[in-house]
Structure formats: structure tokens, C-alpha cells
Length: 477
Image 1 (tube, rainbow, N blue to C red):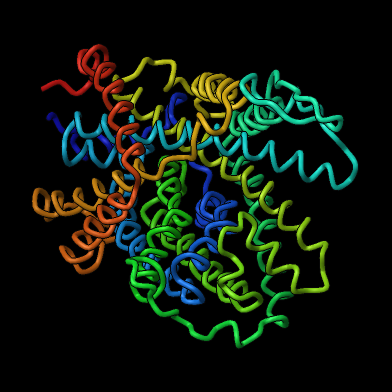
Image 2: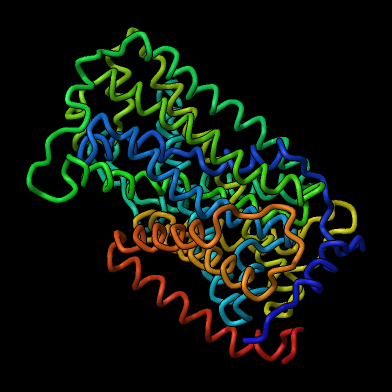
């Protein structure tokens, strides 16, 4: 239960040695990092699922409610990131408030979120790339786009067995190469990607606005079917629980705290700014989509945006949306890999993981060795494991981190009320308590196998902690 003093964290933050990360990120870079991971393919799929099965046209209200829930956690993250501008995000904050064991649990939890998430997104990226190229009569051999455990039907009806998902592995390697060259360069690449995919979202909104049929908004909140969560206000709330997972990812901004210029000012701007921009885009996007097509048309559809686009005279927009998904996935992988290596960097600096994860390249000032190790692990998963086994990037780890950060603000306000706080979470203890309750409520909506997967992963982590981390920790009781 030993706690890492904030004074020591601040000393590490001020470190300018060759083994320290380079501070090169301004407020705009941080906002774009947040947008880069928040706006992914989920926007193009979950919006239709929530509207068709739960909220109807009131999916816009679901987005607003979900954004409020995220805001509680974001305000707590902003206080910590300005107060303790060190890499590691929720891991570091837990270390300063709840102790080493809780910090390890959260850090290991974030490993699951970022690593498995990056592999899963890479596999899906490969699938979308194959589809996109087929529109131009370019066909990749299925043996090189599927894992050894997957099959595809050839043109003659025969089954073809996969060998390796080469595009999935290559995108992980390519993104890692960008990250290794430096955080500032990674931020510029991310900025270009974000500009392109936001441009596609804005194009959809601009084109679709003139095709809105006001009749599709009536009734705005469909009458409940008698089943909780199927329309009515309970449906709006259930829809909020679903689209909430489109928002998570702004916490990845806090992993870059040690590479931010003037973090006391810029970190709150990056966290809250990215959340605000995405909220506005999501609400308008949902409003246009449910106005173009009746919400019932989205039931059971895996491509609701395509249904809306069919109402227009612009079929090319479908290709643009798939391109946006490809671009969006690329930036999600980038931020996932960036956040993962920074969490490992902090854990290694504390002695809880081997030193290789905190060695910094003398020129690029990035944890190159850590990036390469993680790249190898994630690329192998992406290349040889089918997406159904890797599974979707679990949100339970992020929600657990949100709960811990909100609780940390309450604890630190009591333990160190006079500590310097460049940014203060407003309405304490109300905001942190609402954040805890909201995030825990979202966790209860997750299926049982997700909880089981989390417990197994944490069990593995505890074995590593008590076998290595506890004995090598630099913070001795």
C-alpha cells in the first residue's frame, strides 16, 4: 500500500536528462490526440444500433447523456494531469493516492485496453482495406489477409485457408515506426489523419442535411415496448450506455502529460477540448443520420450509414465513409500504441517492470525499445489470431480506470487539501461521486464474460507483481 509522493512525481516531471521524454506537445496537439482515438469506426456503427434498437431519433439525447458521464471523469483527469504532469495516466494517479498495488492493477488493466485494442483495430483495418481495394478491382490473396484459423470462399466455391493477416501486421509496424521517430512527428501524422476523417464526417453532415425528412423525427422518443431499454426514456438511457463507448479514449491524452509543453495549462485543454469537439460532432452526426432515414431501418444493420447514404444522390459517399474508417482506425492504433508504451515507461521507471521499457533513445527521446517489444507482440496477435478470439477492445478497463481517478480526486483533496492545483475539478465532491456512479453503472451493462476476462487478466498481473514488481519497486516502505 506504499504511496509514491507527489514531490517525487514532480521531480521526475522536471527531469531533463537523456532518459527523459521530450516535451514537444502543445494544446492543439493534445486535442487532436484525443480526437484521434475518440473518432473511430464506432461512430459509424454504434449510432445506428443505438437509434434502431433503443433510442430512436432521441439517440442525440443518448449522446448528450453519455458525454455528461464522460465529463465527470474528464474533469477529474484534468485536475490530476495538471497537478501531476507525468506519463502513466491513471496508473500514476493511483500510485499517488491509493498505493502501489492499486496502481499496478490499473496499469496492468490499461495494458489490456491498449494492447488488445490495437490488435483488434489492426485486424478490422485489414478487413476494411480489402473491401476498399475491391472497389477498384484490386484483390489481395485471402491467404495473406486471414489468420491460419480463418477461411474464405473463393470464386469457384472452394475454401481457402488463411496463412497470415499481413496488412494487420504491417499497419502495426508502420505506426510503430512513426511513434519511434518522435512524439512530435507522431502528433503531426495524427493531426493530418484527424483532419481527413473529420473532413469526411463534416462532408456527410453537409450533404445529408439537405436530405433530412422531418417526418423521421416523429415520434422523437418512440413509445416503450414494455421491455426496459426498448425505446422510451429507458431506451434513451440504454442507448447512452451503448454510445458511451464511442467517447472513451480521451484518457489517452493524459498518458502524454510528460511530453506536453506547459502541462499545467495544456493538459486540461487537451482532455476537455477533445471531449467537447467530439460531443458536438457526434450529436450533429446522429441528428442528420436519423433525419435522413427512419430509425427502424437501422434495426439489424451493420452499416447504418450506408442506409442513410442511399437516400442521397451521392453513392461515392459510401467509399468516403469506408476511407474515413480506415483513416480513423489508423489514428486509433497510433494513440493506442503511444499510450501503451507511456504506461509501461512509467511502470518501468518505478521498478515494477524491467528497465528495457523505460530506456529512452538519445536522439528521438522516445522509449524505442518498449515500442519495438510491444510492436512485436501486437503484430503477432494481429497477424495470426482471428478477430473473434482477440475480441473487441474491452471498455471495462477504461471504466475501471475512470472510477479510480474520480476516487483519487476525493482522496487527495482530503489528504492534501493545500496542494498546488493548477486546475481544480469543480463542485467536489459532487462531480467525482457522479463520475464514480456513472462509470460503475456503465460497467454493470457489460456482459459476464467481459468481467471474467478482466479477472483472469488481473490474476496474471498479480502473479507478475508479487513475483517481480513488488521486490524491485523503487518506492520502499
